[in-house]
Length: 127
Length: 174
Image 1 (cartoon, rainbow over the protein chains, first blue to last red):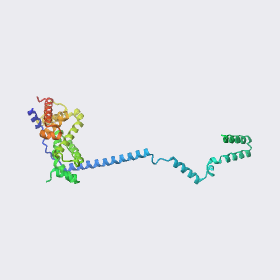
Image 2: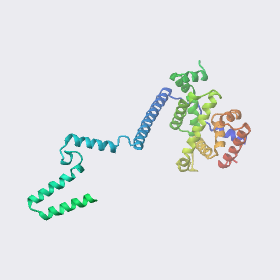
Image 3: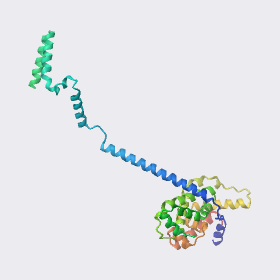
Image 4: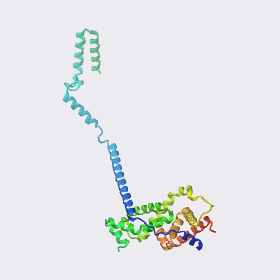
């Protein structure tokens, strides 16, 4: 066994290798720099993912329903171009709508239609 | 001339040039270690790059509980073991393994024996392989090997003995 150990040790290569130290150090520096850049890119990517995830969970930036409603009302109030918006809520104009329509139909000679409209109005009021 | 410990302390205090000095001091030996194992200049330089890359990242946490040479041998050993693992399948399929019984001159035969030997060493269990690497490539004593590998001195001896037995059988040196 000792002979075999000696035999194995004899296969050793001369360990004193001539090395260009400057070139080696330059390569090492490049590698370290590359690793640093990779780590920075990874950090930024992770931070962006966290930001997107957080915004998704909190739904920050998504339209708020209440605000939208108020904003729509504000716009209506500012513009006041639609007939239902002239005197506020369109429900308040329900009576005047029926009476205007009834007069219009009478003037046009649609008697039965006027009658049906008035009936419909009465039924709705009962409800 | 500053010793390793002083250079490490300087590096830990932020002096980058101290690290370069450490590299210059241990480069030849490190590449020599890997060259013995791989018989390939380029591969041994790449593995040495791996070693000093790891060293750069971890040396700031070095607490001087062991000597620096033991610490560096441990990195060398781990890097070599990783290389053996990475090349496991590659060495199975490698043409270098082809058993050519034809004529060869003495130098080529030496080369062939060396490659065959390290090919067989790569197949040994990790503990045995580690001891063989330290014993053959670095000529370290069992005491030093036990410090590097963390196994008992007796265990290192037993592992080396088993490794030699296996290698002898496999290389038909009975």
